[in-house]
Length: 122
Image (cartoon, rainbow, N blue to C red):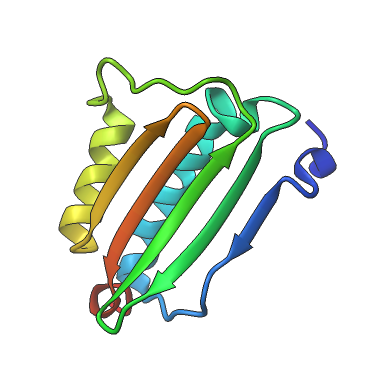
């Protein structure tokens, strides 16, 4: 794929937030895993798919929403306990003190990450 392959297909509209050294590695790994899966199986695996990443704000938490649309029909995996999934779950709940929720909507995957602002700053 060329560098322009995703031009106009990925939109990131999140608030500015401080991310410390410790949290940066965990957050980057989570985003990398989601992006890899989108490229293999989700919206970014087809030329018409789109990805929107947005945020909502609470005083103590930030919610990041990963929304895929226009890709293949989505079904929840029979076994969501692969190495990558387990690593994501542990990183979000352990290191970032947050939660991750998957909505396997037929129109496309929706992932909601709830993250502690204090933990993100570390």
